[in-house]
Length: 205
Image 1 (tube, rainbow, N blue to C red):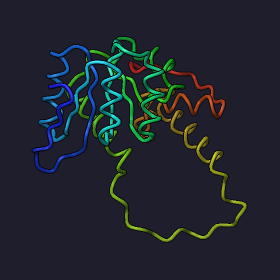
Image 2 (image 1 turned 45 degrees about the vertical axis):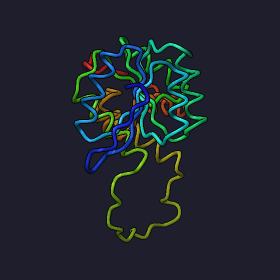
Image 3 (image 1 turned 60 degrees about the vertical axis):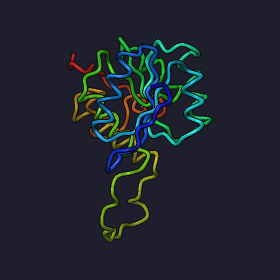
Image 4 (image 1 turned 45 degrees about the horizontal axis):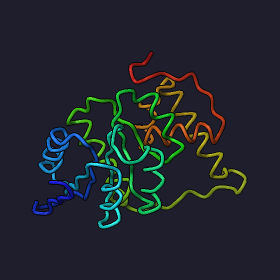
């Protein structure tokens, strides 16, 4: 099944790449994703994953943290050189630690193992929306404002992130969901804007 892509389903939702050396787990995840309407490419190691990524357009690449062939940070860098828009999601036994280590490499999110089927499908849907974009809303006229009222983009983005953190009590996963961003992206922006919230983990501790 390696390198296989199922494109026979109606209303196909997009193309995913699943890179995992464990064939049984890879096949089980592939079946779940295909039943949900996704086409799935499979890879057993990092080099096969990069080859497949270069041969077909992929929205999201799911990668096991123990994937042989290349260190994860190097794999992420090479993957974005091939496909700058691909969303990279890593499966890890220690998601909180991995997300901080891999965020600088451009990893979009890290899922705690074992990964449930609903969480896998949610991540696949978010990846497709991020690349393809959600349906465009109906245009509405913008209210007129004085030039002095318009904040620079960076200041506005920082304000939005700080507000989301206050609402969620510093919970990074809830903040990421509220802003429709990956946790790795949130961590990068916290460093970028020098924001130091009192962080909580996914259990609120």
